[in-house]
Structures are given as structure tokens and as C-alpha cells.
Length: 305
Image (cartoon, rainbow, N blue to C red; front, top):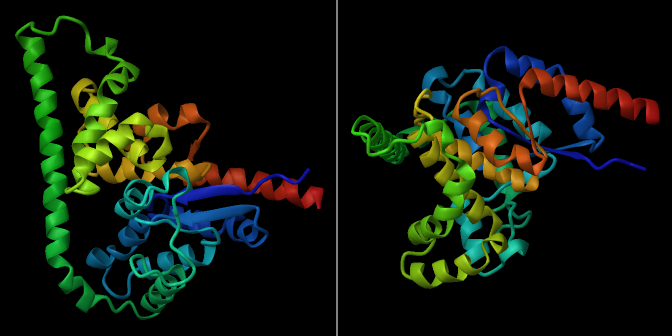
């Protein structure tokens, strides 16, 4: 019986330094060409690769990283979170919502071939200076949003610390269970942030989602990630609050359609994976363990063939 392809997504940390060379020298390309491995990219991963331009300049390694990322991408490129929410909720597609950039140009989303063509040209020239200047304000706003989210998480942690100090909270933090938190907070939180999906229809759409959250898997996974971030801030006081937490749980939500997440992040992202995705049978591999896994799979398929 032929085994199903392994579906893989990458975190930017998998391409840092020597890890990129480990990936490049692994059996990944061989297995991609045999369709034993299907690689999907999030647009966040691609954007983080490109923004290495800021520190490396036009001749930096990011161009090799981008070229390799495109070469291994035989599965497709996911829509952005806001686009997936629109497909699931506003357009009412629910579990049958389009999740990948289409192969033909779409009036709202563009197309995968167009994006790949633009990125390949960028990997050749490294000429990002004009685009980078044009997007400075957008990146500054994103950075401020990250800082604001970290500040909110910090306020939550301080509230708990004050409650412990004043003995308003008398049970140990270790007794807090995420399962209890999410069961209490999921519906309320999902309704609260529905304005990010459609501000005008937020109330009606929130009620629709609340009846069957499982029918809107990506939005629900995002809400679960947000709640975990808040839980982590409030009850994991021995761990730092990560400024990139939203990007981490947002990326992990794409495991709805993949089997393996490759990342060397051992902080918040690992904690979020262990809590939210490991129980669902998903796998998070470091570059080194992933290369070993690929070597085993390559040997098995070669002997079977």
C-alpha cells in the first residue's frame, strides 16, 4: 500500500544559519520531486524570508533561502488569515473554504503562479529597495501592534501577580488548566474578535460561528491560539512573553492542513504546539530531526521501489 505524502510547513527559524545548509543537503528535494513530501508555505513565512533584506541587504543569503523555498513548494501557498476568515465565514464556505492561493488569477487574492513569478524575479535581483521604502509605514504599524499585544499580555500577568501578592488568588498557578480556560473563553473571545472579520456584521457572524465553531476551522484555531497566548501570559510566569506570539500561533493554525511543522523555536511556539496541536497527532520537528526523518523515509521508499 502506497503511503500518503508527508505534508510540511516551515517556520522561518528553520532557515537560519547552518540549518539552511542542513535542509538543502537533506533528502528534501529528492522526496519533493517524488511527491513523497508536499511542502506548503504560509505567506507570513515568505514575507519573513524577504524581510531579511533589512539586515542582509540586496546580496544577502535570503535570496538563496527564497529560491530554495520556491523550489520545494510543490503543495501550494496558503491564503492569508484574513482571506481564510472571509472564505470560511463571510462567504459561508465553512469547511469547504478555499485555503490555497488559486492557480488562476482571482480578483481578490491574485494567483499562486503570479506570486511565485514575482518572488523568483526578486530572488534573482535582490532589488527590494523601492518596495521596502513603500512598506515602511505598514511595517512600523505592525511592530506597534506587536508591542501593544505584548503589553496587554504583560498587564494580564501583572494582574495575576498582584492577586497572588494580595492573596485574592490562593491556589497555585500550576493548578490552572488550559482545557478549563478554553472551554470558558472560546465563544466569548471568538465573538469579540469577529469585528476583525467583518466589522459591520460582527454580531450576526459571531452568533453564526458560535453555533458550530468546528464548521469554521481556521478561525476557531486562531481563537484557540489567542486564548493560549493569554493563558501562557497569565500562568506561565517562569517564561518570557514573546513579542512574536501572534505570528507563532497563526502559523501553527495551518497545521489543520499539514502533518509536520519544521521549526527550531523552543520558546512560546513550542509550548503552543505541545498544548494545541500535539494532542491532534501533529508533529513539530527541528531541522535536524526533520532531516533524519527524511533520510529514513527516503531509504524506505528506495527499498520499496
